[in-house]
Amino acid sequence: MKQILLIEDDPDLADILTVNLLNEGYTLEAATNGNDGLERLRNNHYGLLILDLMLPGLDGLEICRQVRNMPGYLPIIIISAKSTETQRIVGLELGGDDYLSKPFSLDELLARIRALLRRVQALDRLAEEKTGTLYCGDLVIDPVAREATLAKQPVTLTAKEFDLLLFFARNPGKTFTRLALLDQVWGYSHGGYEHTVNAHINRLRAKIEANTTKPNFIQTVWGVGYKFIDYPETGNDV
Image (cartoon, rainbow, N blue to C red; front, top):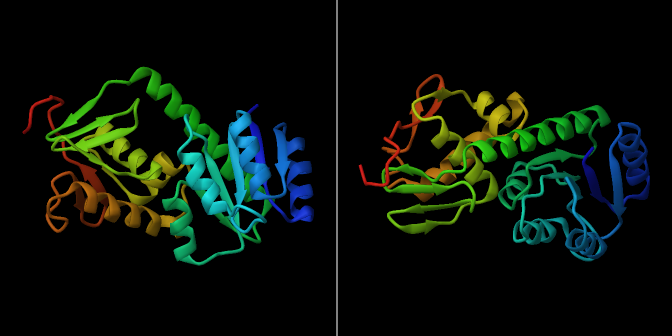
């Protein structure tokens, strides 16, 4: 079972989560401030991070930034009393894989943990099977280095933007609804989070499309969802 690090300064909530996660069979460590949490992350290997945003010392957003600069990929669930759409988007943009607003139900958190760990395991298996570089016209995607270039220029992507682009590129010509993309890329389906897909696609298009109103890569299928154009998998420009 994956080892979880919980960084949460509310002792009552930390105790409740610790007891219940241990009862579910997870191994868990808890830190009560950002500095202690970051130190643990630097010196230990964890399978999942549950992270509060408002912490003594380093705040959760700064921890997210630093985690995403560390080698390897650590899935992150953000839990926060900051429940506005802007805060959720910022948290996801900085590298969070999921975001739960306080107060939340324990059952929902456990479901999100299971879904996220399943998705990470599936991506690990897929990475073992499909490690080759993808060539989509002048867009080149390296799944191992988790890097993308466009016309030989690097494209700066967040972790989730890269996951979304890689999923599209590995499934060219197939149309996906927003809920299907939530399930496949984020690891859960929930109608209230469809705006998250829209926001990520808009930002991704702004980075890879010459004209976002007439996209060449990620195309809208009206009334259904989105699809990635079916490029021949070749190193030559198309």
